[in-house]
Length: 494
Image (cartoon, rainbow, N blue to C red; front, top):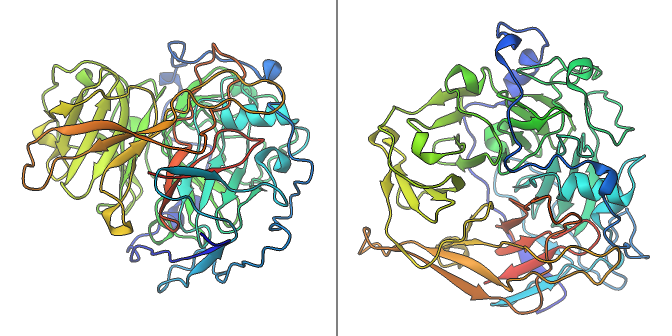
């Protein structure tokens, strides 16, 4: 492999509706919904509410790392696309200044001459509080394909339930291999490390937005779980697109949930409301702890599943063409076992595939969700941790299977070397062949050489899983893993 690789990035055709056109008009503190009906949701089952006080530095950063995004000395590879998400036409190829792994391998994107996530922390955060805000506050971020030529991973508005807060967005740009921080453009003063107090600092339920922001519509930080989605810029609008927080979970010190959707513009740093109505206008399931959302690109929808699957009688979704929460046709509840762990959108077979904590798989017909779910036959043992599965598209040279990585391992010491993950392999979920559509979904593992780092954990009792920090990078046609805020981003090819 050479020092760089030419890649090409494709975008979806434009949508007729742009979500950003409505959000500014919706960002107001008064509303017809009664705050009296909102009460603190119980997140104690899986949320320890740990404060930043016990956070550690998680390891020293590389002494030569800088914030300027410079590439390694002597590396002449450059990015030859600066459109930053132009939605018209096919974007040009771009060159990345690092190697890509071969089959069955993982390699680091070198940090020498670049930076790491804690290098971009805003004051007065230290490495410990910043790493806790990003990597141990119950959730991660989402991959934004249109934010740069090769795409950007974004963690925005993370924190909640006494965790240290992130008010803007931390980004890792795969075009340059560097981290950056985009502060909020709502005029909120970010100079703090303590969480938000609900009654004195927000407009209260149902919105839980910061009253000190000069531009309204900025939500309090939250546990993000699998609730962050970044649809194409052609759907949401904006030069670089946006990340959308489907609903807010465990917001403020009191850990309240918000049924309002919010979006963060990746060009301007502006938070705004992203739905014309509330989830609770159509669906009253709660709490939002461990919530799971999935983007349906064919229908411009974000599907949402919460909690115990056997109690579900309909599936809510956010329709991005009119920015409105809607509900599928109702169906009879099924005798399933377990809570929702992940949700897959299978565009090839037209399914919504639900993975439960019991290891069961269920599927809806996306065109007729009201017909109810059908249990799928499974061969192998389904992992039951809380993480998002990612498709390896056949169009990219993949095998059409979904992959996931647990990332679990020992508690971090205060300095490197960082611990290796317990499992040095990826989980693989293979759908049945087209010739046998009713055949089993096969679960297996794929060994990876090169050393996969464990996810950052400073408190073994916290139970803070990464949720979404294993993801697919279409422009590179590889998977990526972000284990912590002080080390390298790791690239993986099955």
